[in-house]
Image (tube, rainbow, N blue to C red; front, side):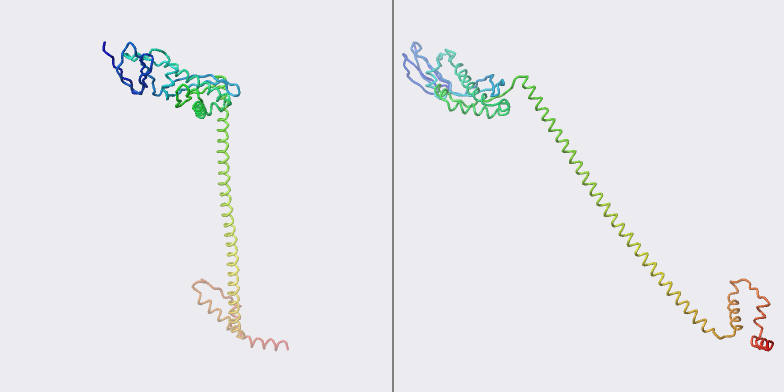
Length: 310
């Protein structure tokens, strides 16, 4: 009978037992062996995922359903090989027990214990709002505890994919949130309306201020126009008075020049002036009395009247 050859996987920590004693151990170990007295243990060291669904109570006694996933790896294969059976068939590499599945279940149980402690210390609203913080707290608490280290397991991450309350509580929270959103929308609408009113009032005030300035300018223009009209009328009146005085003075001087002359001479001069404008006058009627007054010798008549009275 010839010995067989075993070649380990790159991510398996292989331990070879012969005659009930450990003969060799290492990552991706390869060796020849006798089938009748050799046992091979292959501890997987790659990262593994385990899914979970927990039902826990919050600090205010509200049920919460948490669904997530934990990622872990076997960091100390020697410790894990003592607590779990990772024996495989060296020919087919098939596991000889179900302890490989037990590691994930054990990790999930420890995650649930840590999650229960964190959820019970928080009210429902914080549990629902701080999912990432909750996952970080669970991961930190498990990394600092010795349960996983005793199994040779290292927790990489613990994530909560879904955190939900009961349907009744969810409806109540949705209603409360809906009302809050509606109130915020109303506040936004009122604020927008108030801003619009303020803008309209500001525009109206500016329009009134502009109208007032225009009216003031118009009143000033009216007052200035009236003052100018008054000054113009006063100036025109003074000009007319001066012209009238000058004309009256000229008339007085002209009359003074004719003062002392024979009335017949003055009448004759007037007739001459009328004759010069005969083209515009048209016709002139001279009565016999007018002619007699022109031809009458006024001094002789005066003397005859004096003699008669004597």
